[in-house]
Every structure is written in structure tokens, then in C-alpha cells.
Image (cartoon, each protein chain N blue to C red):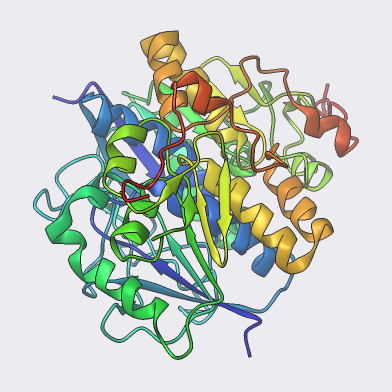
Length: 228
Length: 228
């Protein structure tokens, strides 16, 4: 029996480090520390999926990177932690439809995940599924204005490596997913476990959610919900 | 015509962030900055390969993560940059044999890669292929004594996020691959390009090779070649 069952949502044109940062943290916990975890890699179909578009096939640099799903949004088993990476695909509403629908259904499920976790523009899918309505969240700073404008019912916090709002964890751009996942691990398993994972990765994580130099570098400011 | 053709070597039980860190840097260059790059994902067979063992199949947390190769060590086209991740598989001599053999042949090829690049214990495969004989290199600090003992003809530098020795770039544990790849990008395309990639990832890289707090934290010291 797994201590934590993880669902990783992979759509065409996800960002590879958004996926691999949190996954590396969990792999260390599982492979090096012997923690019993389970994983479902969830896409819209069973076709391999990657940072490239489906139209490109495997003809581009990103398109050649293909990951094998283990189930689909239509038949995924119940999970404890949903991980949603960002990436260029996240802004393509038509392609994202089944993924957004899955998140919406999961949130109102009789047995919803204990944690929702997004990296980068993955929070846009949360916003579009309506699960960030009246919630605080963050997203990447490089495309701040574009992404936050598409989530008008959310309070977007600029100077944040990650934001926790109830059971929804949203993190900033790309490598922020590592720091956010280590913070979540500290919450679930304690600081010592998170410190051990961090040291195995030789990564200097942000220890506080507000340690985010990128908000200032990109000139990002908080965005309030439009209808408030 | 690609400006740089990258070969990514993937063996059973590679470390996922070792792979994804450098790949993310190159994806940003390709997807967001429009640089013409090409990629070959090279394994020993065309079977999907991942951070788990082949024996586990897809039954474990790591085993469920499977990546699709585009060619094998037996038929890979010529490349400009070879990337070799580390991971638990790297110390399994029998499984590594075809990969080590490939690296050895590549190094003595009529048209060898311009750059060899390893992350974490990937440098062990370089050492075993003989391409680190009388060279300086580094590897991860978490398993320093174990890995360096298996490369007795190499000068192992402890306090180094990465080491450049001729055209061979070796980096330290896991996230050091990101810093090393950004340093290589700065070498090839200039600081401005590397800075842009770094900012897109919202990553604070080590700017100097010697910025490595982990050597001291793990108490690692330089290891001289045994036969010197």
C-alpha cells in the first residue's frame, strides 16, 4: 500500500523541467530513501507525449522527447497528489479542454486528492478549472501579465516562489517547482526528509515562499481578482 | 541544418533531473529562442527507458517513468554534443557495457563530438571509457568516495560545480547539470544567451565553476590519479 499516490498530468508541449524537478524529489524519496510511493502518468490518450506539439510529431528538438503515459484522464485511478506542469501547451484552450475538465472533476470528486500542485503556467489550468476562484496563487514571472490575465477570479501573488491556498500549491517558473515540492515534502514528512532530498540533489532551495528574486527582476506586481 | 546536434545517452536507472536540467536549457534555446538544434535520444535498444530498472518493468514509482529513444548506440548518427546523465544504473558494469563502449568509440571517431558533457555519476562512464585518463573531472558529492574510487586514472576535483578538461565537461550532482550546461551555453553562444535561458527558468545559477557548497557539506577532498 503506497503512502502517497501521485498523479502527473502530461499534455502536449509541457515544460520538461517543470515535470522533472518535482519528480526527481519524489524519485529520491522512493529510490534512495525507500519510501513507498505510487505514480500514474496521466495524459488525454495513451500516445507518448512530450514538450513538442503532436503536429510536429517527432521532427523537432522538443518533439523528439516523448514520455509514455500509464493511463488517461478518462480512466485514471484516484490519487493523493496531482502534479500539473506548465509549458507552451497550457495556453492552447482546445488542446487543454480534457485536462481542465479532468482537474475540475477531480476537485469535486467524492475522494479528491489531498494536494493539488502546479508548476509555472500549470496554475492556468487550475484557474480555468475554477479551482482557484477566490484563492491566492502564483505562476511564472517571465509570462506574468499574459498568464494572470487569463485567471481573472484569482489573487495572483507576484513575490512568491510558491503559494499555498488550502490544499492547492502553485509554484513560480520552472525551477520553483523543485523548491515548492521540497516545501510540500517538509509539510508531509518533516524538514529532515526535505533536507535529505535537497542535499542528494545538491540544490540550494528557497526555504521561504517569499524568497523570489524573479518578481522584481521581471517587474511583476500582485494582480487582484477582477470581480472584487 | 542544425547549429548543434545533441546526443542524449539514456540507460536504465538514469537520474531524471540529470537529464531534464540540461535538456530544459536546450529546449528554451530551441522553443523560445528559435535556435536550430537537433536531438538524438540514444539507448542500447529502442525499448523505452527510465529511472527504474528493466527488471522492475513499470511496477515501481521510478519504473513507471519511461522515455522513448530515437536511436541506439549501434546506429546513432554523428553528434556535436554528447550528454550523459548519472543515476543508480551508472555503477552497474554489465548493463553499462554497451554505453561505455559507445563513448569510447565516439571519442576516437574520425568526427568526434565537439563536447562531451556529463552530470553526476555520468562521469563514471567517461572514466570507464578511458576518456578521463590524465584528465581533471568532477562528479556528485553525495557518493564522492564510491564514484571517484572507480576512476583511478582521473584527477577528481572536489570543490567544483563543474570541471572543463579539454572538450570534456563534467558536472557535480543533479542540479549542477543545469549550471554546467548554462556555462557551456555561455561558452558557445555568449553570456547574454545563457542569461536569457537562466531567467526563463527562474534559476539562480552558479556563475563560477568553484561555487560549490556541497563539497564542504559532504567533506569531499580532491582525489589524485592512483598511478601518478
